[in-house]
Length: 389
Picture 1 (cartoon, rainbow, N blue to C red):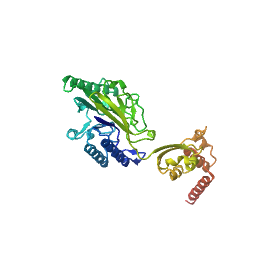
Picture 2: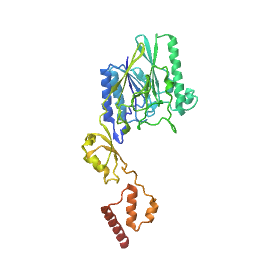
Picture 3: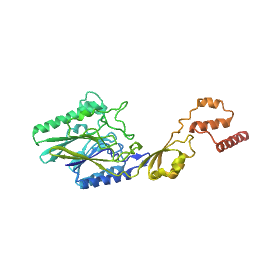
Picture 4: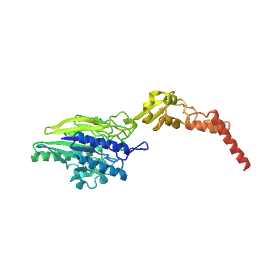
């Protein structure tokens, strides 16, 4: 049996103000193609299906269409809710959808109710753990404390109890286990685009909570990574922050047979527009052929000029039209003035000095001659208007 492990689709997300729906459609086309070409039996989505609790109509329609295409390609679907999803909205109609091969696990009460997959005499029990907000579900789960580790431990205890009951019932010669969970497991590498799963702390759960399970399909961290032989993050299918510029995006193709986990391999998908993280002076960025490759990329640019260049974003976008983030980091280090702004203003000789001092304070660059003349003219006009009044 071939199972495609994915997570963190974040349908409806934007990238620094740029809508990503076209890129997400392209990724989903590739996913459906992989299902067809790799003869995938089951597609897993380990949380954060949507990017927000109230997705737009076009986003909901995209998910509906994609689920139908996956089913038409011959694969069943098992998905859970993440911390970005509204569990109740994503799970609406779940009991009806299950009859059509789409299994949704968004309720705490259902986490120990697996989807059963036949393996030529053996059985694969797939459990879906939705995102568990400790303060909301600790009491229901009987957890020792409203904390991520405690609620995940309580959830896994229920799953292990159900596994033991199935194995003792003897319905199948062997019962293997696969668990989906949307959480932050210790040892995982984070990206800038994930929302922290805790308030006031990291909230990571210990990896050994998953000991004894055949495969754990994790969601939440956006970098694809292996924490142990059986515990992995598939990562997000698209980069959602510049910190993911070096990621290779895709999922995992997980294979089970009667003996259990038989193999795991990466599946890669194209992400469309490249991400460029550039750091240089304005002159270098505008003139050097070294940066030609970034002209069609989404760019995060840090200027290292000692003085902040005029019209920096406007000039950069002439060569790099999709510059989305601009920062300044002078090569000589921050230009620090030993005097406070109030002290500097107190020493100003006239109104022109005050205006020029303010300009330097807010942009870290002194007024040039043309700017001083412009400010002087504005002050003269203001003075003349006051006299005439």
